[in-house]
Length: 369
Ligand code: JHZ
Ligand code: ZN
Image 1 (cartoon, rainbow, N blue to C red):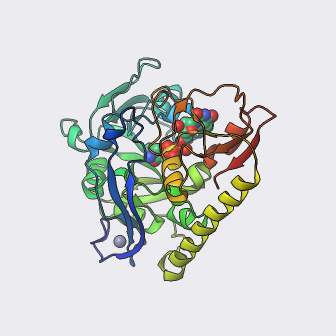
Image 2 (cartoon, protein in one colour; image 1 turned 60 degrees about the horizontal axis):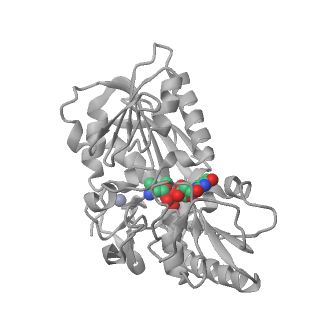
């Protein structure tokens, strides 16, 4: 299989076997579907990618993830909107958020004076803040929009979900004004490897981005990286601002990503993480519930062998997940007072602080990482 960015022949490095769709929360267990989950890496640009592409309609037409549930993410979006706003001295114009989800970022962009448009394949209600979210796929459903229409285009945690990243980026370049900025955020594969974040590997995430791969992709479509920053959100994210025909900022070293040892080390760290979890779980006596029915909870539970024998329920504030079962067979309920629960397992380690603050003082807490 060839790299979807630079077309170099890839090298297999991880096989997690057949796994259920990570956001496949169900009411009827017969609807559970399993697909192979295996990862290859590019020895040239250090992109990692899945070998299997699950058809997007199976993933996104009944999509239960709502990015606005987390205050931490809301704050993150507000800071990004402020930063983008400061780049333009001219009056703010149209901004497009690709993969807008529930409009969390659009809402912040509106507050900073942009006219926010969004596109997302799952049906979203944006009436609360007055933005306009078109239901559809980018770039398939934006062909009717004229060239140079947007001063800012944002895509946060979207590029990992895209199969044809070349067509995606070509369309971004087409739709941007000449001085426009494309702000991209992707979880950084360097942090995934270093932190043994194996639970962020699932079918929705087709690519795991290195900075080199991202910059190569932009460059192939006339977009240069004018600003790069590290963001702690979601276990370590890179944020890159791209602009047409601009002077690029220097490269960051990613030498470790071209070293085969890095990938062996990841597997050792992954096994240690699972072992550490079971050691703690077995030491903490009493009843258990989970907190945060994240997509990553599915991968963690499946790999660790965690299920309804180990957790009574998983609490989650997302209305669309409540009343369903996690793909690993545990009911999802609204967060309550945890009566009768001795221990709580926090799955979204990326929002540990925010979730800890919501737990009653009498429960003991374990974090899956
Ligand atoms: P969270 C998602 O992954 C999906 P997931 C997606 N594939 C992606 O790319 C990444 O994000 C970036 C709940 N919660 O955000 C909400 C509470 O109930 O780590 C979520 O269900 N109360 C698009 O699903 C879950 O936890 C809270 O206070 O792994 C967190 O999921 C908080 C903070 C969260 O992403
Ligand atoms: Zn490559």
